[in-house]
Image (cartoon, rainbow, N blue to C red; front, side, top):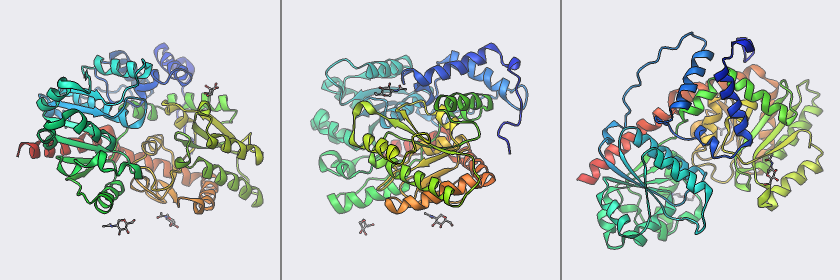
Length: 474
Ligand SMILES: *[C@@H]1O[C@H](CO)[C@@H](O)[C@H](O)[C@H]1NC(C)=O
Ligand SMILES: *[C@@H]1O[C@H](CO)[C@@H](O)[C@H](O)[C@H]1NC(C)=O
Ligand SMILES: *[C@@H]1O[C@H](CO)[C@@H](O)[C@H](O)[C@H]1NC(C)=O
């Protein structure tokens, strides 16, 4: 099956659309800030982008002219006249703060009064923080200092306080002091991590007394229940599992055949990978926990397998998106040395860290999610890849097991060294069975449409907020 069934002559592209595509391409090389909108929540104020998107949707849709359907009321609309205070441990372009910002924008979208505090800020000016705060203020989020009487008053006046990540727990005693007991009953604690060093009483001693905890996957929630009980002797509050969802912007690119084709061609050309070659991508910041080393070992093994079995396949390539050579870590060096040693430089491509994942998702054929240890808490890149109709080869750990249906939307392999050979076999399997690979990708896409969209996430969050608000009143 060909992915591009419909032919579009270039004359059919209106100028606007070409400009939009060009903008994406420019973004790939530009600052991550500009690209931020790919990952952020809906932006009802951002008219120009909206109009371009609508135009693009109309042109590229297989069913001509799209009737603009009036959006259903947001499940969060009951939050309209409420005040919500969001506490972020830091402000950067990393998963935790960005997710909290998405919540801020969803709430602003229904008219909630949203207040934001960042606990840890560097002493010197920081461009990223400045831009993110500006972006929030543009959308009506009130950015406040995280300390002092103003912070205490804001907390006391709010209907709901959302603490983001375990570390944010430090803020309670440090800032609220004797007011802690007044605020705890309206705290919703959003937890996205499961590494050992978060299980410290310093961070989480107030956890049993808050209105609720919201956690990104069932495995992570179970882990927290177990660890708080066994390690710290404390009990989790009412705990809600909320799987995340893809932003509307990401879905728009994922569902746009022309945009995807242009991005695919552009990225492949820049890497020297031909259209018919098979590209396996791992998109995560480079670190041992994310398993890029084990992936490259598996990739090398799959090359050997293909050679031994004399399989007639198009050349396979690996791309590692998420490098940061300026950090000069031992691990980065180790990856490159392995590639040199095995002489697979022409098959392995390293790309710097970026928030603009869409072009890479458009360019690859299979996503590899190789997080080690307990795996990902959720692992958002997995649902983003599925939106692009990509099958996923993932470790059988953490949230990944709640996203991937083994053998249906992807294939699971064990964590650790034991996973290398199974992953190599799975790489060869998907390289060999084209039809199966494409079917898996389609099934993954349908799974995303059924449960991993922003609307689904908003609905899940709204259920939690209703319960937490009811509880804080009682
Ligand atoms: C918690 O985890 C430990 C170690 O993984 C395990 O031995 C124990 O049975 C678990 N406890 C519960 C209550 O699940
Ligand atoms: C990637 O990052 C390194 C180190 O920070 C830098 O030298 C290099 O120019 C970057 N490459 C691209 C394509 O931006
Ligand atoms: C995934 O499915 C394959 C084939 O049925 C099976 O061998 C493997 O154990 C399964 N993995 C997990 C983690 O369920």
